[in-house]
Length: 477
Image (cartoon, rainbow, N blue to C red; front, side, top):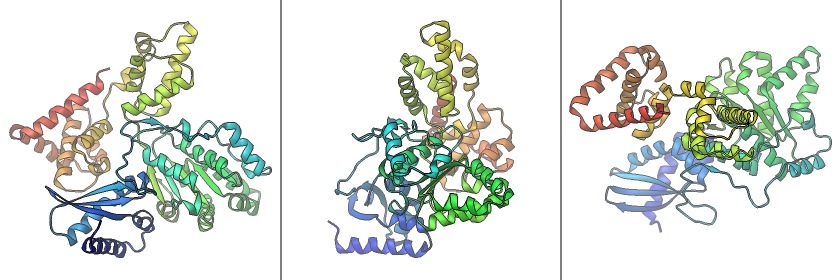
């Protein structure tokens, strides 16, 4: 139980944060449900246990708001402290923990089937304009999406939206960002398919940005803009747009997209868009569209780690009816580091070869068939080193590329630059660009700093040795 003093303290923290972020809708959405559950006295100071409704809130707050919360607490409370987030849930249960490793999402007992999706949806929408759009892929469901650390937030956000689209869920618009072949299209379709099943009366528009652009240009040429606007603004309860980065090409199309986006959001229609880059990185995108997209929730997807790639490959092999030894699965997962599409492509290549030759699948055959790919994959990239260093020093990957000068980050950034220069054939300019546009003198100073400290600092020497072992292990196929 909280005493009155603790409750008043927490009320002060919340009010201070709200006052400093009065126009921040995201903070209201994510932080408002946060409560102070208890305050514990520990050997290293007080521990403030903050209760959040679910795993999605816990993940988002820890990634985006926790630093601000700690700063506000330190301004009010002068002693040493720490903050822990615990999940309260509707039933009041605490200390639920997200799965540590990759998993295949387990659908509820009334799992959706392709037949159910189409039957329910088109029975309720016999003349749905969805029939004339890009069709949803009914094989892309939440139940066929493998969840790992790289995509768990994006998956959770999409599932939450599919359960409570529009004003019900509060995550609008949702922006899914990530390199090509990471599963963005799968999640977009999963949202559409889930909503189709749960809310068959809803009209869903799923479209590529290129299709939107072509339809707009055609309508302009044939003077059918009223029909175009009615189609896109009048019928959609759920608006799903893929590959939105191409909208940076034309002003007239961007204007129509902005008004379409604005109209749907003002009427609490659910909008989900996907792109291979963040809104701020889309060249030529109008500021008002960028601002509108950043107003909602951004979920980033990165390349899955080895453990998740192994789980994905095992799942896809099972779906295709391919019996593969574990050493073959591990080999393919290890060499397929660029995308999930690459992972599946290597699986299909091996499957086709064995079927044509009538040979059983084993490790020697896999190495022979995928020899060229394995050779290319053995090379370590700057991104590989950055990820290793961020994991080792427990700092955020994006912070390595930032201008943050806190001591733990400076050490991690300098170590990453040192390892990059030592193990990769990269110029000082290349290294600087990879770390957020640092100049060559900054890179030189970082390398010299690490070299000089390796002589006297045994802890740093141990860290560098461990990271170098990981680099060597990564290339050893």
